Length: 154
Image 1: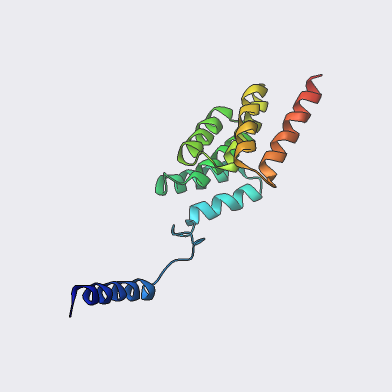
Image 2: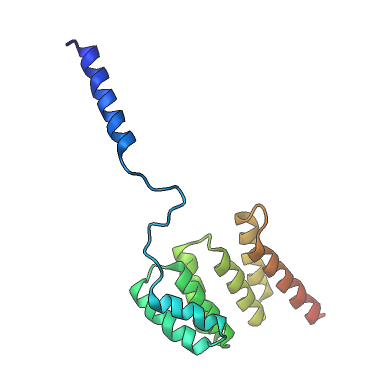
């Protein structure tokens, strides 16, 4: 067997091995399903139980400290309960973990409006405009919130 034939066989063997290996779908989420605390937190949010949501999501965040969605939901729950300082802390953590997190940009923008800081809300709207090139509910909702805020201040 000459070198060319040996290389061809080696290449063919490698390609067959790769082709037969199991693969994940491109859109598969490799992370485990949400914890019971995460699910309980979402349920509490749906019920408007902000303190219950904070309790459940805090427990979920202890188990999954790098989960931007949990941090965002904690920020949302604190904001809805009127506690802006911890809300900002959790939104900022969500954005540290995932700078393109649409919900965190929208919700921190709304929190800045509650804190009478429309300039910071506009910064997050600008970020959403860069991230969302097509239909984007978060961008549109924050833009409407800023419009309502400005109209109410006139």
